[in-house]
Length: 118
Image 1 (cartoon, rainbow, N blue to C red):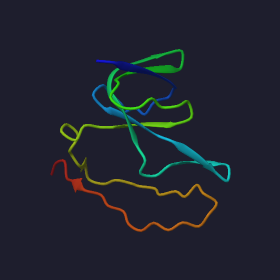
Image 2: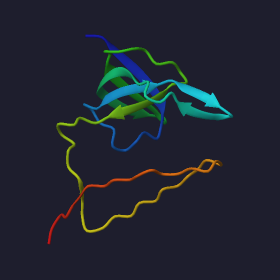
Image 3: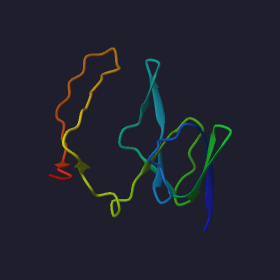
Image 4: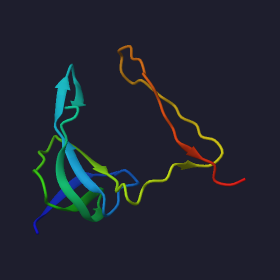
């Protein structure tokens, strides 16, 4: 099996872990802002090892897909088999912030909540 080594600047998302699957999306620059090419995601492979040294994260993945370029947006997806629980607790706070200078509308939002104890 072949592997690919990704070197990324830190900080990484705190929930990334071994067993997650890495993907990338090509970024497009529109009016000085980088956007992902929506819906066009490319498989890199399953994460096998993560190490951080001198503010550089080294991620080893099974190489199952395509090689990303230096400017691509790299992200990960958690396993649906293990990570299927809903939010637990009594309350939660969510802030939706529009960082764009353009007017935006949010069509809908959804949250599944399970009370953790009584």
